[in-house]
Amino acid sequence: MRRDIVHPGAGSLTYAIREIVQVARRFEALGQEITWENIGDPVQKGEPVAPWIRQIVAEIMERPESWAYCDTAGAPATREFLADQVNRRGGAQVSPDDIIFFNGIGDAVAKVYGFLRREARVIGPTPAYSTHSSAESAHSGYEHLTYELDPHNRWMPDLDDLRMKVKYNDSIAAILLINPDNPTGAVYPPAVLEEIVEIARQHDLFLIADEIYTHIVYHGHKTLHLSEVIGEVCGVAMRGISKEYPWPGSRCGWIEVLNRRRDEMFGAYVNSLLASKRLEVCSTTAPQMSIPPVMGSPRYPAHLKARADMFEARAKEACDALNGIPGVLVNPPCGAFYLTVMFEDAVLNDHQKLTIANPRIRSMVEELVRESPVDQRFVYYLMGATGICVVPLTGFYCRRPGFRVTLLETDDAKRRWTFQTLAAALREYVSSPVHAS
Image 1 (cartoon, rainbow, N blue to C red):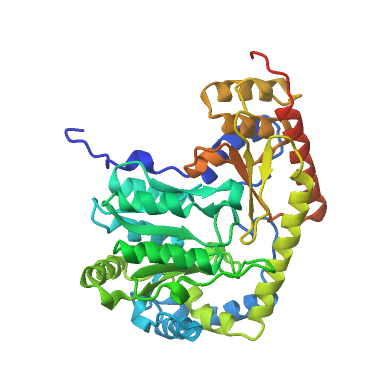
Image 2 (cartoon, helix red, strand yellow; image 1 turned 120 degrees about the vertical axis):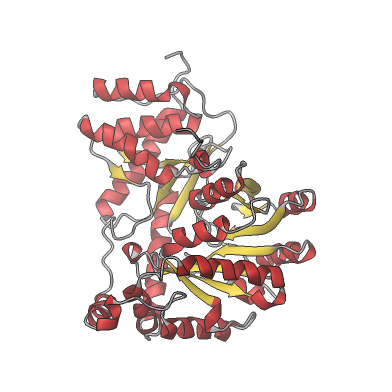
């Protein structure tokens, strides 16, 4: 090409959760059966959508307007319903104009970062969810800015680290928090959220809260929506139906814009997000139309509680299997449906192995691990030896070695096998003799 056509942030667009699939397919081609533990799709892992929700969606599809464009910001009745839900919580109040729909949270993330001024940075947690870290890095053209989540304090944000980085980097315009967190399953208590809001207030920043898992919080743990603690600080909360109904294929998410009229610059920025949606006409109509009858149903609170209880029981099952392995740290998740396993310092090296019976698969693993991070090395050996596909923690923009596994398997026997096999592989790997390959 006579001109360079590649965006300077193109190399930042990585998504380890999906990229590991390309490697897994190569294992499949050599005869390895894969147990997919890489992606958070409840439906793909066998969870049926409740019949009453399916019936509501079926009835909506009989309505002609469900096949048509809706308003650019979203279906008016749905935005009114969601605005009323926000206002009933107390805290920041919104109007239907403060609810803007996107084609899933991924679309919202792309717009929220993509329409920031390039010099305006967003600092987010590490481990980082890849969609956010890649979008922020691609938008700025630099490495993603992060604050630490502390694995020795239940993966809570290191507020001193966040405070110092914000104070001494005036390019930071916003703070991202993910609550409940992906990949760690941490749930932030109200006091932690209030402190993050206070840091934003002191430095005149806005907040971005990914709340896609906000209704999957386990018994005994309390958190709040951003709208309930934000006070007069400007912010954007991201929500969706993909993890709640669950309906990930709907690609239906929205943002709640909080306090947009308190800052003229923030208001202009939000207007640019809506203008970008006008170029696409609108987001998907039918899933939006389902929200008032589904979320407004008296059956919905029990639906949410049953799913949270289910994932909590699976989290306990996983922790029971994985706890007590030397050099391996497992923090019980408090929400969402993921578990992060971390290796302690100096536990991993570039000589450890797992026994792989198939010589062709063993040869491929040995080729793959030659220049891999130490946790990715474990992930490849795990897949080669057992077929279990997990995501290395370094794939979540994190310097700590480990991996993320899901709590989504619906087959009880398969799930027990997965956790027990994973535990056995961890024990074999961390205790394997140190020798050159």
